[in-house]
Image (cartoon, rainbow, N blue to C red; front, side, top):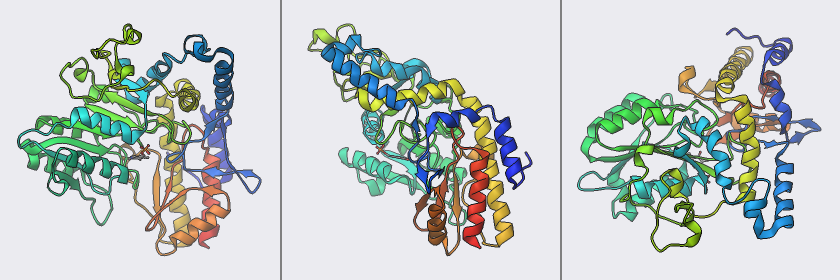
Length: 423
Ligand SMILES: *Cc1c(COP(=O)(O)O)cnc(C)c1O
């Protein structure tokens, strides 16, 4: 696609964009009396306009029905988590039986590792990316220690290339081969939170299986951002946040995928609670746990309705827009941001650098921009002008144009502001 750094071009793209109207379904923070140029949907997605009414409905139903709301509420609370199944199955590329909405992301990673990190004999190692999101590192190391294993010897961290800061996938494949029958689990972020690099989830999963290990994925930065086919790719398990690309609001509920080959395994180690128990006999409270034959077996508690409602409002919009159309727009929008950064760089000679891979199939919508030397001051200047982006030490500005609510005009305006900030 050929781009132009002009307002006219950007506005024309917005007129031709079939998804453009979804922008009006979200609320933008206001900076200097104008809607912000919001590029942090990878960190906290925006509030859908209808979220407030959805929450008010739940408050009303609670007031009207009290405990009877479990069955009488407009959206009954007893099966509340089931309202997420369809949209999550589309976002994850999964069977409906393979997904469930519950807990927070790190909590879910732990619960999943209880089931799928089962070190035995010499097969004790976990493979991950170096500089993974800190919470993932803490989770992996504490899981190892929980099994009386030394993280220094059992956590294999694939380091990025010091030149590009990206991870060479060949290094991942080499490590899988090298550790072979000592590898128990791989747990990698599908899209790296720092560089925006998207990994070949299918290829890596296959390589991990070939040496007899299991493949789990942290999809915090992938869900709702890039197309996923977790079922067909044979992924063992995955989890993602609700509050990043999926707009569930701060601390909102996470999503989980567990491949159907792991369902209905009576001897699988698992931390269990009543919400994972067979629905028909749950309330007769039998002594023996009888798991639901789906990913729902991993649920512990009944659904936290108020923190799930905003996610419901957003997922309805995802269902309407469709991941395929969102990805098509996303490729154009992120391509435009990349182009604008190159143009500004040519005009200003600022030496701007993009960490994120150039190839479309190796990234989602995020661009990680390095402004050598003066990054922090440039970040502060553009922030004052109404750009909401994200600063990461030592020198990265992370930006995510989100196809659901960002426009080409947003990116053109950002280009003008960046140019001024560098002048
Ligand atoms: C955002 C993010 C988290 C956050 O974890 P919570 O448990 O939701 O607080 C963890 N891991 C990765 C890779 C993330 O991007």
